[in-house]
Length: 229
Image 1 (spheres, rainbow, N blue to C red):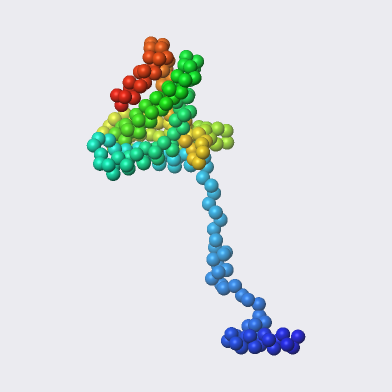
Image 2 (image 1 turned 90 degrees about the vertical axis):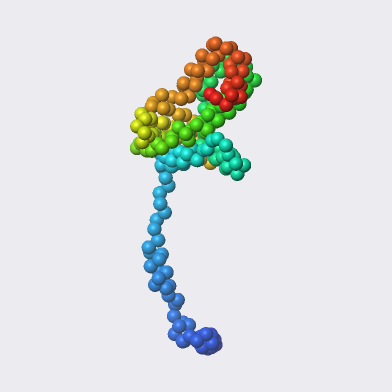
């Protein structure tokens, strides 16, 4: 025991400490203790509606970045990247499938695959290229509340009021956000309460009735070639 006390005294002297400091328990710095006491609890995770609302704001911001007309090579590269970013907001496969709806039986499996490819390209091109010009100087306002699954989960609707300074009639657009890999994506759209997908389904039905399956597909190809819906 005496040897241990002597060793402690030697070490204390070599470090410039008193013998009392060697034997006294270490004390936490007051600043560290205050910092630990003031540490805030983590913020609550955003609700599905809050996440979908944020995604909606990001979508409109991306739409406003779309440019048309003569572009330099650098600008074309920027637009290609922007379009790929916009792809991350939509469940195009589901939208295209829902638009075919009850008319699915009119097409063979091969024709359905061709329809899906053509119609998705048409919708993607029309939506991305025109939304920026359509919005123009419009102000967008996310409306409160949401209609969705029980308990506030997905899928749920986010409504956006679009108003133009020029005095054009305001429009309310609804986006149905559905669960998807990595982040929520849009699987349905309404304009002033009317379903865009249901309107597509009605148009497809009329074209199939007038043109038949093959004529319908040729019409889609012609519209895609003409870069118009």
